[in-house]
Length: 151
Ligand code: ADP
Image (cartoon, rainbow, N blue to C red):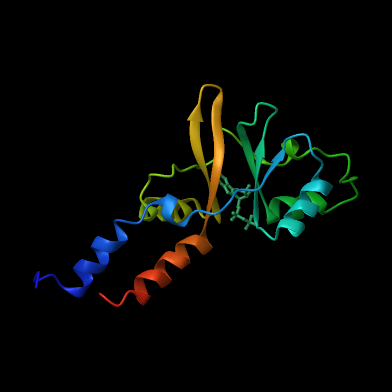
């Protein structure tokens, strides 16, 4: 018996969780696609945040549901507006790395009041998107902690 309290064991387990353990597959669109096509992709992929990449396949921005809703108010032709006009762009995109602690990534989500972070890998020309970390992924980690019989 280690003499550790339940809460100490819980914290220990939580601090072993990395982004990589819970990340999902990212969905990306090119910065030149139209707002209309981005909306279609968001529905077809059943996902709340799209990551935007440039022609070098490097991260250039993020599109949330509300970004797309905002662009849809008014009379503009959504087929003619490229997403790079309305996205949140680099360097203002909050990212994380696969080896980051899940807890740190979760803290970024809360602090920035956003739903998802791109999981990136640094390359010569910028950042390659290799995953997606959402509030749902963090919730899954919470459920796993609660289910663990050893605690
Ligand atoms: P919604 O706008 O649909 O509620 P979010 O809360 O995730 O979804 O997004 C709020 C705003 O923050 C949007 O304008 C979005 O472009 C931006 N945003 C979302 N994710 C990120 C991120 N990882 N880094 C920077 N900005 C982001």
